[in-house]
Every structure is written in C-alpha cells, then in structure tokens.
Image (cartoon, rainbow, N blue to C red; front, side, top):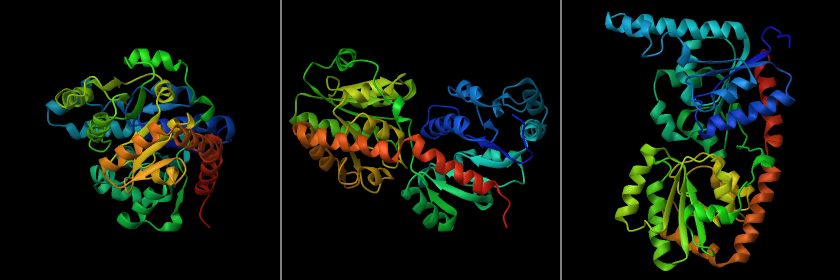
Length: 390
C-alpha cells in the first residue's frame, strides 16, 4: 500500500495485556484492516501477551524495545554514573524515529493510560482519544501528562454515557467534542467450544447444580470481595448453587483464596485463574454478576450476554445499566449485596425469566454491540478528526 503523507493513523494502546481496552482495540484494528482504506501503525508502551496479534496487523513498536528501557545495558550504565536523563533521551529518540517512519496524520489514543507515550511522541498532529476509563483511573493517572492529553485532544470517543458524563462533569470537556460509542465484540466469534458437562467436570460441580459467574482481577474496582459476600448470602439459602470467578493472575488468586477458606466457601467457590476461552465458562453458567464498584462498559458482560446470560449489576457503578435496562437482568442499588442476592436467587429459580432475559440480552448485543455496528462509526470519526480544521 502506498502511504499518502498525513493519511495514516498511529494507534497507541496502553498495554498489550488481556485488558478490556487492549482487546477492544485489537478487535477494531482487525475490522479496520479489512474494511478501512487508511494505512496504520501501532505503538505499544510495553510488550505483552497480545503483542504478536498486534504485530500481525501492522508495523508495531513497543517502548520496551528501546535503548532507554530500564534494565538494558546502556540505561544501567547511564544510571550508575548519574546520567539517567540520557536514558530518557534514548527512549524519546527511539519512539520519535518510529513515528517519523509512520508519518501519521492522526494519533488515536486508546486509553488515558497512554499519556507517557504521547508525551514522548511530541507530534503536532490531531489527537483522537478513546476513553475506556472512569474516575478511578483518572485519579491514578493524574498529572501534567494527562492534563496535556485532555487539552490536546481534538475529539473524544466515550465507551459509555457514564464515561461521557464523567469527562464533562469532572474534567470540563465540552459535550460536543465527545461521542459515545458503546464497546463492541465480534459476536460470531463468541461461542463455546466445550460442552457444559465438560466444564462442570473440570470445575467439580455436580450435574443439575446452578452456576453464578463473575470475573476479573482481584482489585478493589472489580469487587472480588463483593462476589464472595454474595456467595455467602446465596449459598446459605440455596445448597445447589456454585460460584465461579474467572480470571486473575496467580498473585491475585491467593488473596481471593484466603477469603474463600476463612469464609467456609471452599466447597462452593471455584477460582479458574486466567483461561484461554472464557466463553466456555460463560456458556456453562446460569447468571452473570458484575460486582465491580466501577466499570465503564465491560466486554465480559457483552460476551456473557451474547451467550444468552442475564446480568445483575450495581447502579451508579459505571455503564452497564445502560445495557441491562429493564429487559436483560437486574440493576440493584450500589453495593447492596442483599438485593443482588435476592435477584440472583430469583433468576436461578425462575427459568422462564432467566431464559427470557438471556434471549433479550443476546438480541441486544446483536443489534447494538457487534463490531460491524461500532466499526463504521469509529472509522467515520477517524476520517473527520484527521481532516484539517476549517
């Protein structure tokens, strides 16, 4: 492909790990490569599990590979002799050399966590920032670099109305510069490869029992502790229910397992850790619960919905109530574990409502949240943002 000057897009991810924002970008880029007509390149602040997948799509550079990376010999020597500033110069020179080869007409920032990379780039080209975060991450990222990114951004994409409102109320962003495009998934790829019985056998769940599923890292934001509190309440009343938490690293899981043991839940709670295909577990479950204290618009909920699972979530905890509404599950008051337990029990013992809400969830994902719906809208915003003003 011949690259026209200023026609290409430099996509900046925040990590190459299996986080929601990175997965969302990777899925969009696969669609964009097939359906778009602009060349693009990819900048990763660090390498990770998804690096090979990004590299398959376009020229990709990770700051980890630069001469200024901590631990590399030039950096170690410079730090030892008190010339650490030169290491940052190496890092800046490497990233700008890559950007010069790409000659982008637009920088597409996929997360506010990418501020360090944007600061190093120093390019005077339009910036489009896709915000997948609420205030928790804004506080963690706060500083001059984030302030600069928000000021330089020409156009924002918010992954939910909750994210848009937070940008307006907490950060003074003009409403007309923000467009909400809810997260999307490639629905045709969301399917189970194993039978329900196989998953039950792996999890040591008896045939005929029910599974309530949730997942994420063991973080305050994701609410693994609240998931265990929910399990305590439900299991006291219902002996045939098992709770499965999908995801989390080995470092995460020992904390959760500590609470599982002391709460007497070892027979009722299963911790899978990181798994290759979450769809197998979602398909085997009966209800998905989102115990997050703050979650902009989690992909796992859309994937569970695509597999016809009703969702129970908290109000005022992010964007998921925008999806659940009144037909795909239940929205309970913030941190009201008793109310969540009541709604979970209702769904488990009312197969009519459970199946009806699961089917509605599937239909809604198909109509609103397939990548074929979101992709063209994002591409149109890219085309609009890359044009010179006036």
